[in-house]
Image (spheres, rainbow, N blue to C red):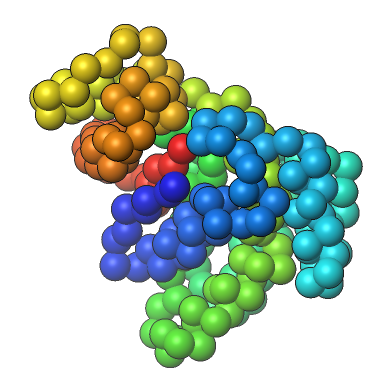
Amino acid sequence: MTRPRLTPIAVAALLAATALAGCSSEPDAERAPGDPMSSAQIMALADKEGEAGHVEQQTVLEDGAVTFDEYDGAFARLESCLTDHGFTVDGPVVSPVDGVRYEFRSDFGTRDQTAALADLDECNAVHWTSVAQAFELSQPQIMDAPLVTATADCLRTDGLTLDGEEAKVADFVSSVGEAQGKAVLDCVQQEGARLYPDLPSLSVGY
């Protein structure tokens, strides 16, 4: 589950966040919240990208692992695709929410929105979505310490009890219970926006 915070020109953040969440993708269907994506699931993504003709993503994914350099390279290809289609890209910045995900924002300027969103979707699908999903969901996630403290304070203000050992979003959900997952996402977004106002986007998931 991923919930993006958007500014008026942060169109890419919405699509990127949706793509990276992994909640609805077939290879990720058996992954419990907070658990890393397995090599088998990553290789299943490689098969999917191969069937779609996305050779660069298939090549990255077919060994069942994604390195940071491969992730960064996929972002560079995404950025190049977007700029070729008239977008400007702000970022990337490593997310304080998990210490893994790239946060970025894209602006299509004065282009027709329907055409711009179609190009955005295509660039994400060809160059980014599965590699990003595999990397971000297979790496150890650690929330920035000030955000941990602020999120805990926010949840306690809401009357929720924590175990005091939380270090990532999934830990908070585990502490308060899955039924309070939305409260966790809301607190992380609220406090993240307050602590890091210059981030190009803010995506929250577990």
